[in-house]
Length: 68
Picture (tube, helix red, strand yellow):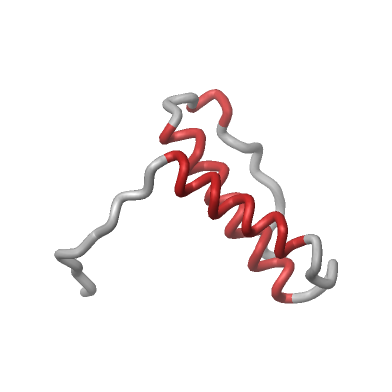
């Protein structure tokens, strides 16, 4: 089991900054690459985090096929 006493909290600004960096990187990634798939997964998770941090659960992203 992994535990951490130094858990860092992410605020809305940090999350949106991370999501913007992911989107920028996605513009340069090859559409069918493993990197793009990983970036899509990361973006999906950050969208969920954004919805939770803004307390707008109704804005949770729709599910889509991520794993083939």
